Length: 417
Image (cartoon, rainbow, N blue to C red; front, side, top):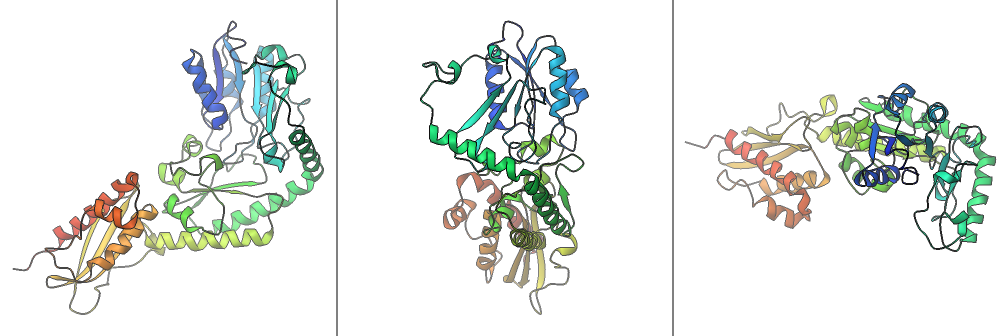
């Protein structure tokens, strides 16, 4: 759309919270000389119509705002945003991949020119989607590919009839089941939220805005997200979009909402669907509660739920030596507690906030430290620990913090005179 209308203007409006399916093409357009305005949402995740209107310019040729956010489930006021574009003669596209089959979607009632949907989000076959083009708006488009007259010359290639039929049937079923499913999933979502909120220190992402029934996104204080996900072996959850679940980076959507790095990185997205049950919700809630409590107890910032080492000395006649590195607000925070008698470590314990490799290495080191002298306290180097524990190279920096905590123990451990 932008390329087809470049003679009228080279400005596009979108949002920082869009799916990469929209953000990446916008970045490509910027490389081609287009100007793109990325709107920031409110703290609830909504794009305010006033801010949207202020971003529209005489040279704006396209605006693209999703109907339902794929991470936090917030519904945007597509009707109001589309009306602002229509008043100004600006093409308006909405990514409705998460809306179709989940909320009522009437393209004739909404002031939209283009709507994109995908089959697999509503239990249809993978590999097929649809683009709604408003009658009279085809002239605003130019093909990305050339080579045939299929799909009104917009996309060449022989059509996959079985996928199209499967998509159509999935839409029929979704439309028929939508009222009942919306009510059922809303009840399940709220039940899950109530169970998780009992932990305390739990933040609902998207609170205060209308949300789709089947998505719940929450962040946990004093918990490292990668360790949380790795501990939930019986659940299929992600710390952001499912497409990005392989990366531990904080969610860019939650950062756009103003969440700090820790809360953005400790978020979990729960997706509820047609086959989700009350027992599934109960199982998920209990699994998360157990793991969050475990990690908080392990963390130096665990508060009332954390371990108390104030009186621990590892047995009679021992002196307690502490050393820590990292700290609040950092991605790794490690504290060692050593019970020493004379020149020997009798017992070692630790607290840690960090990735699974950090916790695993600290656990292993506590076993290695027992019986060691002050002169030989640190058994090897972070590189050797990484080799023994299977730590990937990109995590080596976390182990340097572990080493720094042990060095702090050495400084606190006064040598015998």
